[in-house]
Image (cartoon, rainbow, N blue to C red; front, side):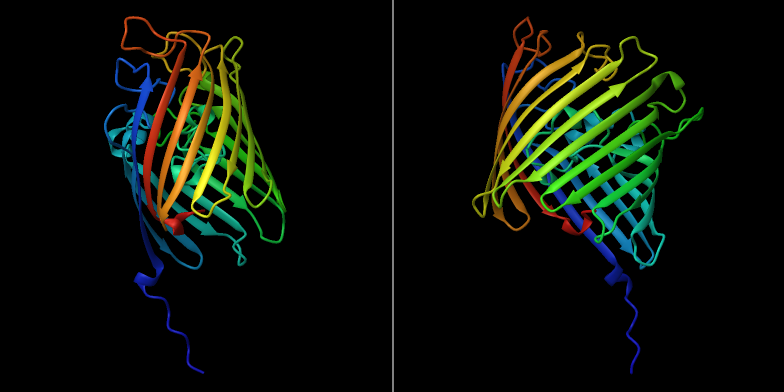
Length: 346
């Protein structure tokens, strides 16, 4: 019996491209030409823009994998503005090790997607075109070490993480204390439940940025056509007086036709002590919103999306082209997504 030839370099190498373009308008239009500062995705108004352009590569061995992804677009310009220039284009740079033969126990180190939340920076992975308030104001990415366990034979899975703060790639010269994270998930038949946590300083050089945060997800595959998600965030900053923030979100998606889908979202966000509120905002972040989304699969790996979204706040937090701001804003966004990177889904 002849021995099987070993896999060549090209057999173990994977590459992919993800492109998400969009056009957006708001009523009333912001005087800055951008959406509210608490949003980091699909922010530019008027004209065709790129939200995420990602070029990905991986080298896969039986016991380990190396993954890299470089990106550009308005998402990275907004969400990674605080990172050094050399790190603003890095979407992922990680090494994954399989710690047992069945590959159910894994360790990942480097920069990798966040363990928190039901949404990612890639619109293809989400129910809706735009991201929820929760997703925009919690980590999309993180750096550190992640040890995770999962098995197709067991409905439970989990992860433990040592992190370099709250959505940070750079290592501070005065690094004092890492943050820790955890995930617990349960999936059985049509139900999915998960709890994702963060405990530690948002800035590892400043212990007064300490946060305790948890994200809860309850998902239900209602029928062949219907899926539902309930997501809740709650956080506490003990060094801030009254430093509790919270956010509920509910989403329903209908996929009754082979190439069409609809989604509806209701959500809110409350940060009275300004723990998460961007420093450029005059008032604490308190906002509610609804959206209606339509998808059309044009071809394998090509998706067209359109979304109407309305947001309202008790304070006038939305910029206006007129001299005064507004309590309410409504917006329309349309996007074309090309995804040739399905092998990179974790």
